[in-house]
Length: 487
Image (cartoon, rainbow, N blue to C red):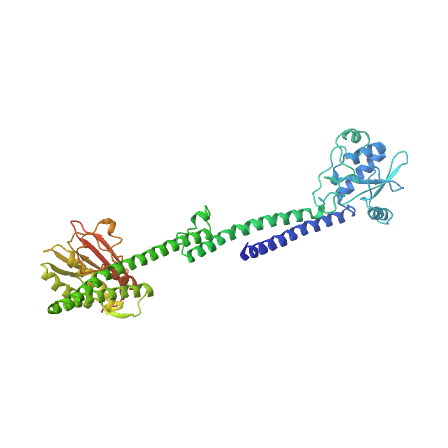
């Protein structure tokens, strides 16, 4: 078990024990108060009425009738009948303190009807009094009910109205208490049971919380050890709490790490492949220059061309690496997007006209954006030149600008009439070194232009989306946030 398990278990258990002792102590004090009240006389009007009934029963019906009355009286309404030798009529134990108090009240100047000395016709007499709570009965606050039939005065009818002596009877006071005799630990049985239950549930609760945390720790260790296929969803099962959400977030993180590592490995493979071809051509050119000194000029031209290709590839890789590493721009300059786009279109139009195509600009992008001018220029130029390069000869490339003042962003749309991109490749054309079937013939590029463009746009707080056009061609939309003020 981990340290968090025991901390959680300890504090939960401490709270349970305190609550249990508090509740148990409350009931224990109530029980003690009930036992103390068992020694107090009942001086209520109802007690006086019951003692009057018992006295009249003894006077007119005799001792047997009084015995029947006391036997069949409700347990919490019972009264005691004690003779001169301190023996109770039903043989019940009498608390000496309560008996002494009753005798004192009987002999006092202001006699109370709640304590009476009742006589039978044969001269037998008993001291009648009632206790506030009978021993073993904790209901000392229960409301008193009215007297039952046969409790009123009169000798014959009252005695005949009572239940027969062999009917249901309540146990005598000095007999066994309800549920049997009290064991020494019985007052603490509820507290002990509550503590044991608290221990069990605190252990289960602590285990419920600590188990997924241990699974997370194991999973993090597996990820750190290079096992990127570790997932926590099977471990979480049907949990739907915050720890389960954390497990799902871990799976998402692991999935992204897997994609990043796979992407890095794929990029390393592609870089190696892209560098191998120009290096091979460089070696061939150097070999020809040595073997054929008369053709050294053409060999140097080839060496220069291949060196430029390698320099361009390394420069693009450094750009991607810098954008991936920082995740944000180092510079935040105000850029006139209208002037930047106009310059890009002028350069691209010259290239398009040389291929028999046209390039048109529609809309107004005289807005200001914040960012790195060189990177933003490279991103937009890559998209525009890519459209010019792949559009069908004799067609038109259109660049549209549309300002969304509600969202404070501008959308640049580049439209061409080329072969387009298969639907399954639309999501991967922005990956490094990706070249579709229609562009694999093009040996001038390395498949890094759109990869750089999407990273630059993302670092400027925008996004880039590519879709196919109806009738053929590709639509690339660039969304960039703008400043509120126009340039």
